[in-house]
Each structure stands twice: as structure tokens, then as C-alpha cells.
Image (tube, rainbow, N blue to C red; front, side, top):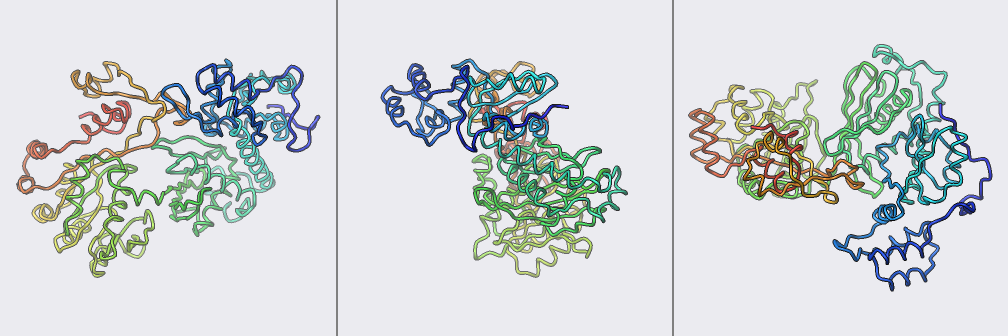
Amino acid sequence: MTTHVTGTTAQPARGAPQRPAATDRRLRLDDILKLMVADGLIASADAEALARTRTLRFEHPLEAIADQKWKSAKPPNKMMTLDWLVEWLAGKLGVPYLHIDPLKIDLSAVTATMTNAYAERYRILPVAVDRTTLTVATGEPFVRSFAEELEKILKLDVKFVFSNSQDIRRYLGEFYNLSRSMKKAQDASKGDFAYARNFEQLVELGKHGQLDANDQHIVHIVDWLWQYAFEQRASDIHVEPKRDVGMVRFRIDGVLHQVYQIPPTVLNAMTSRIKILARMDVVEKRRPQDGRIKTRTADGVEVELRLSTLPTAFGEKLVMRIFDPEVLVRDFKELGFSEDDKKRWDDMTLKPNGIVLVTGPTGSGKTTTLYSTLKTLATIEVNVCTIEDPIEMVEPSFNQMQVQQQIDLGFAEGVRALMRQDPDIIMVGEIRDLETAEMAVQSALTGHLVFTTVHANNVFDVMGRFTNMGVDSYSFMSALNGIIAQRLVRLNCPRCATPYRPPADLLARSGVDKRAAYTARFRRGLGCAHCRGSGYKGRRAIAETLGMSDRMRDLLGERAPISQIKAEARETGFVGLREAALNAAMSGDTTLEEINRVTPVE
């Protein structure tokens, strides 16, 4: 077990600057400015002007330079942010640089190596520890007099990395506050029942309640979890009980990242706290429950979370899906669709009646596409009604109804009820059975515009799904306006993406011919602080869109071979999912590896 370093010796007055030992050397504003002039980054006149100000507003000289918002005099004339300056100076001084990424730090391990007081005393942040080495982030790479003391006490080698001083101050507070809350919450649960090892025990245990869900430490941990998720652009938060520990994971750009490991008793209290806020049954742990919470980010932006619990072998698993209201005001093109896709989509959705189908796997952006389209169509002259399971996002301009299977209110019953509400536009969350499919088709044929989703691999499979359900082909083809199938692909990071030549085997595996590869503008992210080393930042939609021409209706009504239907679609400019994905990769938006992950090679 790692020895814990305290801050009891020679601790200065709170907030007082530290006087380095004789062997230490702090970074000086004058020296850094001279180095920047010598490197051709700024003019000497600008450097002299800043040096004369001698402002005391900043705790670190690089912060004073970043505050000038200078652009580098060297092409490509990038803005010299604090992160940029730290990385540049690290290279010039020959010291290791680290952008602090909280997702990659084991908070419980690093905060156990020293106290908050000790870390603040030397303005350092422990960021990694293993059996032989403690890695410490500092804004003063040449202030190291305390390293010998640390090494003796911890019996570990101390390795220094140069990091953003503002990040160090910020995460010092966050890491240690969270660690304290976690420890105090865990201490409060000592003496209670032992952690349940199976679900049956947990049900009984839940009736007693091990830890108060409204305990201030639990409140702090839950608040931290949400703010942290918003900050990291997470789309989902997973709170998962395991045999000996609880785990928190975030889904960012479609990929799950482990964030934190939490003691089981604390995890149970966190889940209870969240269920209370969502007005869910806290005692009931034997069956799944759904709920929702509205909260705000640190910037005051309103965010909605949709909650789902699931009883597992070691307790209740909780997933919170984060919905950003901003997606409802995005244009179809802003979601990543091509101009051709947008034109075809408008042709389908601006008709007064008919059925519009959206298909794709879970997490492919179907809900965002439908909500943003309905938001555009929901004018004061139009009555938009939805039947959903569950309601994904609450939107005041819609009349939304939720499926309630326990009272026999399914999709089919919901559509039947909505038809008596004088609707202009109806959105059915999902077509799952023949009755719902027939109701949707009948609604479209009687003068309503109907939007719905169905699970299928592509637009051509959708028609087979309806036929297999037993829907009358003639009615379905008469009502159908069009189908869109979509996926989400991660985008290359705009800050670190660079041109590259994919290896021949990857080109062949991806189905890219040599002539197309020669003219393509392939790019990939190298990994930087902006994208957390992944090379990707953000996502966009790729889609195949099939509109209905008279010739297409005839072929579908005649149940023509799929090859003939595809040939007719291509005659009208149809672009398949795989082709759209390849176009995104060859234009440099994403990589071949990413499109191979998301779309199958045809």
C-alpha cells in the first residue's frame, strides 16, 4: 500500500506564494518572452510591452502571455492558447509534456499518495502511480527540491511532467474534493450490512438502506458525475455494479470510456439519490424502471437526462442518456447529411400526407433526425402528435404520448387514439407488429403525414420487413413517401488530422479501387489533447435515401427482384450507405477504419 504524504511540515499561510529552494529555478516572464522572440513567434516590441506591465493578476507567466490572445507569427499562425504555449515551451526546454485528461487518471490511487495540503503547498498534481514510479504534473518543471523527500517517504521514483498550471489548480480541487466525499461516504456506511453478493440479497438489503441518499457527500458525488459528463461531451452515463466494485463509464462519440471505480455501498447510495430525483420507486429493485431528470450545466444550459434501471446479478445498473435540446434546432444539413440527402428528405417530408420511414441500429441518430425534422414542421398552424416508448425528449411544440403496456396502451392503440385528435403530422416511435404497421399506413392514406422507425439493415430491407409482417403491398407502396437509413461515424479531429496514405491491404479490404485511392484526400487524426488522443472529435451522419418514383412503385408492387430495384434506384441518383461512407473517408472527414467499423463492406 502506498504511503500517504501529509502536508504538516513547514506549511505556509493559505494562498502565500512558495519561495523555492536555492537549487530550484522558477520560470520567468522575461526569459519566456525572449525565447518566443528568438523562435519567431512574436515581435520584440510586443514582448517588451508585456514585460513592462509586470501584472500580478496571473499566478504563472504563461497565463499572462496566453491572456494577450496572440497569434503565432509563424505559419499557420495558430492562436497561442495556454495549452499551446505549455506544449511549445516543454519542447523548447526538453521536458516531458502532459495534457491532463481526467478520464485517464485513477483518482483514488493518485490522491492516496499525498494530501491535498501537500499538493497545494508545491502546486503539483499526482497524475499516475505504479509499483515503482509516481508521476507528478507541475507548472514549474525546474522546482524539484521536494522530490527527494517524496521519494524517501513513498519509496517511489518521482517523474515530473510539465502541464497547464490552470488545469493543475482546477483538478487539485476537483480530485481531492471528490476523493474526500467518496471516503466520508464510505466511512459512513461502515458497520452496515455487508455488500450483497447476489440479487436476492440486494432486494432485502435495499429495504434497510445502507447509506443516506441525501447525505451531502453523496449529493456532491452525483453533482460531480453529471457536470463531468456534460463537460466531456458524453451521450450516456453507465453506473454499473460489479462483484467487488462499482464502475462508472461514459459513452463519448459512440465509444465507452471507464471514468471511475466506486465502492459498492457508495454506488448504491448514488443510484438511490438519482432515482429519488427522477421520482422513481427507490425501494423497488426487482424490475426495470424508467425516469427522467432536467438539470443545468455549469454554463446554465438546460439538459435532459433519460434514466433506465436494470436489475443485474450484483445490483441495479443505471444508464442515463443525455439529451441536448440544441439538436432540435439544427438544420438537416448541420447533422451531417449531404445536399442530395437533404433534397430527397425535403421531397419526402414536405408532402401533405404519406409515410416516411427511418431505419438504423440503436444509437445511429434516428431520434435526432426525426425530432429536428418535426421541430421544423411544427408551426402554429400544424398539430404534431407523437406516440413513443419512451418519450425521448420533451418538446413543447409537440403533443407527446407514451406507450403504457400495463394498461394496454401500445403503439397501435396510441395511433388509433391520435387519429381522433385531429392531427396533421403523426410520429410513431417504432413499427413492431402488423397492427401498428397497418394503422400507420392507413393514417398516411387518409391524409396524414406519418413518421416512424423500423429496424432493418438498409432501405431495401425495410420493404421486406413490411411484406413479412403481412402489410398489403399495394396500400404500403401507395402510402410510402420514402425511406432513409443512417449511421453515425466519428470525424477526424480538426486540430491533429493530417494527410496520410492508407496501406494497400486496408484499401483492398475497404473496397477502394486504385484509381479512386489515387485522387482521394485521406486524412487521420494523430491524437492530441483536443481529441483525448483518439484522433476523432465529434460525429456526423451518413445515409442512404430512397425516394418513390412511379417506376419504383411499380417495381415494388410487382415484387421485382432486388437487383432490378437497386438498378432503378441508381438510375435516379441513389447513393448507398457504404458508398456514402467511402465518400466521407476519401474526402478526409473520417478514416477507412471508422467506416469499416460502422458499415459493412458490400
